[in-house]
Image (tube, rainbow, N blue to C red):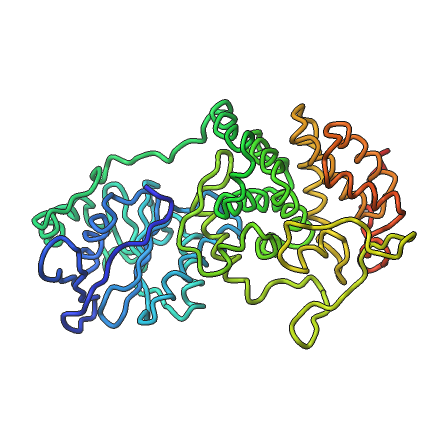
Length: 467
C-alpha cells in the first residue's frame, strides 16, 4: 500500500442527520449507500481503500451531512515537532481543498495498546492534526481509535458514557455497510487481528545495491520527485545534531553526484530547504502546478509520506518564499547586491549557478544575501560532509570536498578553502565547481557574508581552531 492515499469517495446526502448521513458512490453497483454512524464510516473505509489500514490515519471531511475529501496517510515514525507539523499540515491542506468541507472526523488505525481511555495512543499526532485542521477552519468532530480487537472514540474518556474498551473491531466486517459492499462485489485484505508489521529498513548491502542505479546514472536525480525525496532526506539530516546512519550516509553521498542536488544541499543548509526546492531548476515541473504524484521512498531515505508532507509544505510556501533578508524592489524583483568581482577585469568572478532558477538561490551560493545564513545548519552540513569525504569513491569525494571548501570560503577562510579544493581536484581534476571556486579564491574574493560583522561566521567559544 502507498504511504499516502486519496480515498475515492464522492457521496451525496440523503437527509440531514446529527451523524453524517451520506451516500458515497462506490462505483460497484447502482444506487447510493447510506451512512448514518461512526460504525458505518469505519466499515466503509477499508472497502474504499481496498485494504485494512495499518498504522495509519484516515481523515474525512464532513460537508453538511456528506462525506467529502478523504485521505489515508501512514503515521509518522518520528515525533519531532517539525515532522508532526509537516504531517498535520499535509492532512489539513488536503481536506481544506474541498470547498464544501465544514469539519472533519479522524480514524487512527494502530496495533499499539490503549490502556487508559484518557490517554489514547499517538496522542501527539492527533493533537497536531486537530490543531492544523482547526487553523484551516475545519473542527474535528470526533476521533476513533481502531485497534486489533476494539475500536472506540478518543473524544470521551468516561467509561460509563462510552463503554471501555470499546466495540469489537471484528463487527465492522459484519456490519450492514460491509455486507452491502460485499454484495456489490467489494472486498479488502487481511482482517483485523492479523497486523502487518511495519517494513523494516533493508540491510546495508540491499541499500547499497538499490542506490547503485543512481550512482551509475546520476540523471535519475533530475526526476523532480526523486530530487524532492533526496532534498527531504538532506533536510532531515541537517535538522539533527548527530551524524546520520550508515544507510542514510550512503544515500546522501550518492545524491551529491548530481550537481543540481549538490547546489540545492548547500542552499538548504545556508537558507532553508524550501529556498532550495523553490529555487532549483530541477523542481520547475512541480512548481508550475500543485503536484499530483507521490514522491518515492528512497533507499536509506525518508518514508514517502514524510517526503509528500515536505513537498506540500514547500509547494505551499512558494507564495511566501523566505527572502533571507534580500531587499525587494517595488516591482517585486530582487535588487542587485554585491557579488564576487574579478579585480583585474572588473567583471563578475567566474562562479556561476546553472542549476538555479531564482536569484535568491544563486545569491545564497555566492554568500551574498543581506542577512546572515543559518550557521547552525551549515555546521551540521560540515560534519555530515566530512564523513562523506572519507569515502574512496572519487565521484562522491570530489563534491564532498568541494562543499567543505565552500563552507570555509563563506566563513572567510580562503587558505583553508584552497587546501580543500586541491584535495577535491586531486580526486577529480575536471570537477567543475572546484575549478570555479578555486579561481574565485585565487582572485582574493570573499563573500559578502564574511565582510560584515552582522553576517560573518563566529567560531563557537571554547572550540579549537583545527589546522
